[in-house]
Image (cartoon, rainbow, N blue to C red; front, side, top):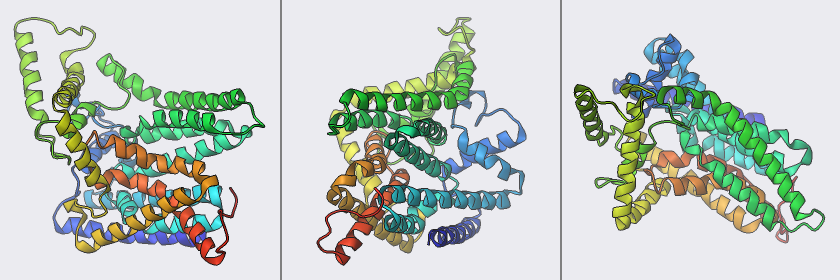
Length: 440
């Protein structure tokens, strides 16, 4: 049954890739999304051995490297064939995600839950789209699911401590695919400590439980740091400062928090142009006056990207402090844009795609909510897979909101929804049943 689900997931994704490619070809474009073009440009530069920058020396930390590295081999082919090959490679990653969803559900609640979870992940239109759109979610989804599964294994068995290291490595790679994942590590640490504190197990001393969790968190952090260290070192060499992910944080934050913000994203990032022109004018003035910038360690061009990021970041923070009511209103708007059952992105296509997305989304969220409400003894384990939804909901009430940003979280919720569906089926068969069967 598992193989059948995986085969079905692959067939559906490859069919969708060809349909989507033909739609894009008919519009005489390579990509439907602006972000896809940026990843592709960087992938071509990696493949050709050129410097890793998007548009010159002042954009060398524009995108994290994992997805461009993944795309790089495909760029050696002819343009449209290369894009189609990249889409099919994304389909294979999507099938990996389906397999990981089934593995997670089986680990918590056994075979019926795994089958239901796998079916939901296989047919969920959002997950299919993330496989074929040439967006970083294609590689992010299997990486962050691997991170969750490895962490769960590490805290359930004393002999599985090194799974915490694997979880940290997977988390680092996921972060280098989607930098917004970085702060989830804080949620993981806080959640793990809270679970440890609230656990009532008289057979184990609380100090031993804290030691158990602390050791795994330290191993997680060490392996994550070691994996990201080459990227950190590169960024420090360029700017002379510690840059954990990219220098688009300021622009992304300003995108969601400024006087013209609508809650959605301005893909062209046109709002950053005045900041860039102003900063370049200041640099030219200082150069012509033979003065020096405060940072003597790096050249003006080396630090330009960092200084522009800081300027946008400070402007966003200043606007937020001065416009608290508008900030709160925008947070609600972003939440609605991200979690609305009916997707509004014009790039998605016709009504049937939107209907399918809405229906499956409602089923997943409904079954997941039912599982979390009903299955008391397994709720703690399921919360790990619900945590991305909580995290991304909070994060994108600050940054911009979009249906795109919920898709990885919904994929993780398929684990919980599969358990809820299995529990519901068991209740129908055995009305007096009060808990999930299967391997806990």
